[in-house]
Length: 317
Length: 246
Image: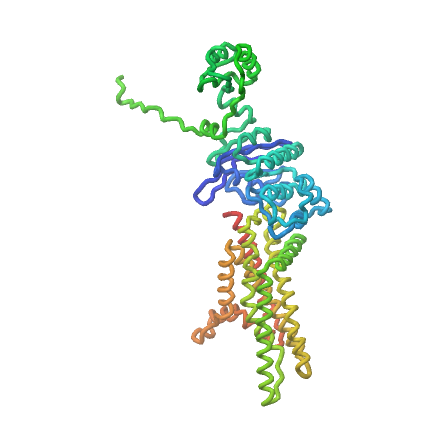
C-alpha cells in the first residue's frame, strides 16, 4: 500500500531524510519511531502529498506522491502533529467543511459517523476553541477518517493526551488498523509495542532498523531481562535463581532485589516464581524489563570507538 | 470548481464571524457617510449662489479612495492566517488544487466586498431623492462596474501578498505599499512619451478608473483590471506551489 524507495529530502543545505526505503502492507500498522528531528514528520508530509521529496519515489496505493498527488491525497487520511483546526468553527461545521472538500456524499451523515467513532457525538455543536487538547486530537482523527481512506498517516497522535485519552486513542487506532494501512509516528516505544505490527526506527534521516517490536527488543539485547524482588535481604536468592534451567547471568542490585538474564523466546518468569516461593521467599515483584527507546537508541546509534591505528612503518619485517 | 465554492463560502462566512470585517465595514460606512454629508452640505451652499446639482461622483470619488485602503485589511488574513494556524497543511493534503485554494480565498473576499458595495447603494438612492431629475444612472452603473473590477484586481493582489507571508501585519503593510504604488506613481513630465511613461501610465489603477468615473466603459480598462486580477491569482497559485518546494 505504501512503497518508498530512496526517498531523500533536503531543506536547503540540511538533509532531513536520506535514502529511505520501506514498505507498509494493507492492514498493517507500521510504527515510525525516532527522536525529535529524526525525519519522521518530513517523511509523513511527503507521503501525505504536502511536500515533494528531493529525490526518490514514494507510492501510495500505487500512485506517485508527486506525479499523481491528487489521487494520493484522495486515498490518504492525515493527522499532522499539530492538529490543524479552525477554532472559530463548530465541530460539525469543521468536519462538514472538510467532507465537502473531499466531495463526500451524504456528508452530514458521514460527519455523524466519524463523531461516533471518536466518541465525540455530543460535542458536534460546540466550538472548537472550547475543546480540550484531547478532544481536539480526536476531532483531528475524525477528520482523517472522513473519507474512509485506505491509508492513514498519523503523526504523533497521542502527544499531549492524558493517560485515559492515550489508551482510548491507541485502542481506536488498533481498531482502525484492522482494515487499513496505518503509518504512525511516535517516540514512545511502549506505544509502538501496543499498537504496531512492525516498527521502523529512523535516526538522523536514515532507517536504523526495521522489525517487529518484540524482535527488535530481543534482537538488540540478545537476552531477555527479568527483575525479581523479595521481602527481606534475599540472602541466598541469587544462588537459587541461578540454578534454574535457562538462566544466564544473575546480578544483585541491592538487598532483596536482583536482575536475571535469560535467552529470549521463552517466558522464564513462572519458573523463577516457583523457585523463589519453594525456597521460602516472599515474592514481591517479578517483571520483565523492557528496553526504553533511549536504551535502544543508545545501542543503535552508538558510535564504535576507533580501533587503534597500526602504523606499518613501525612494524618490523 | 466545487472546491472553489466550498472554500469561498467558508471564507465569506468567516468575514461575518471575524471582528476585523465588522470594524472595517463600520469605519468604511461611517467615513463614506461623512464624505457624503460634507459633499451634500457643500452642494447646498454652492446651490445658493448658482444652479448646481451634485452628481453621483460625490459618492464614487471617496468610495474609490476608501477602497484602496480597505482592500489590504480585507485580504491580510486570507492565506497568511491558514499558514500561521497550520491549517494550510490540512488544505494542501486534501484533494484541493492549489489554484482552487487561491481562487476560493479570493472569491470569498470578493463576495464580501460586493456585499459591502451593495450596502453603499444607500447613498445614491438618497441622492436620487434629493436632486432633480435624479442621479445619472449611466455614471452610477459604469462607476460601480469600475469599482467592482478594481476591487477584484486589488483583492487578487492582496491574496497573492497574503500567500507570501505568515504575518498579517506584514501582509497589510506590503499590500498597502503596492496599492499606493499603483495609485500614486505617475510618470513625471521629464519622461513623457517614453516607454517608461507608457508602462507607468498603463499600470496606474486610478487612470484606468477615470473612464468608468465619467460614465464611459472602455474595453481596454476592463482588460486591464481583468489582467491584474488574473495575474494576482496566478502569482498566488505559484506562491502556494512554491511553498511546497521550500
